Image 1 (cartoon, rainbow, N blue to C red):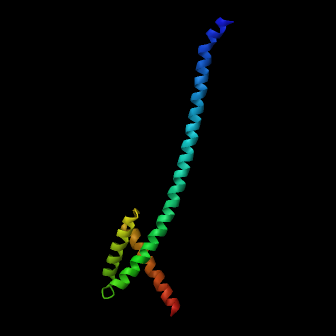
Image 2 (image 1 turned 90 degrees about the horizontal axis):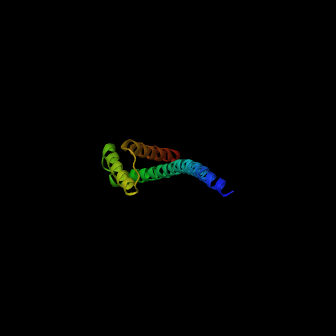
Image 3 (image 1 turned 30 degrees about the vertical axis):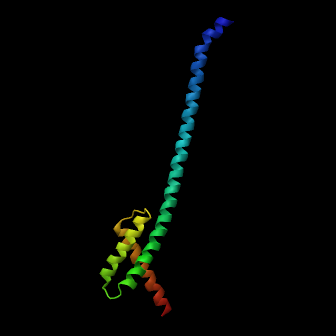
Length: 120
């Protein structure tokens, strides 16, 4: 009986190692799938939060430029609003293009003009 066990032992060890390797591969694959899905979820959530922050800062930038630079023309106000928004976004670690910042400020302007026209 002993010689049979000694003869089969290398085969059993190889089979057990192969099964363990297969299980580890499956577990690592599942962890990777979960990691990718979680990363996509957090990226989408962070992007939504960043967008909300961008629009709030754009509103602040518009209000700042309108009140602090009353006597200047529109392009100077826009430049100041862009500068203010860029600094505030950088402080919060939000990286967006200048075009996106300008679009958010223009949106804040349109929303303000729309609210003023409703009052009149």
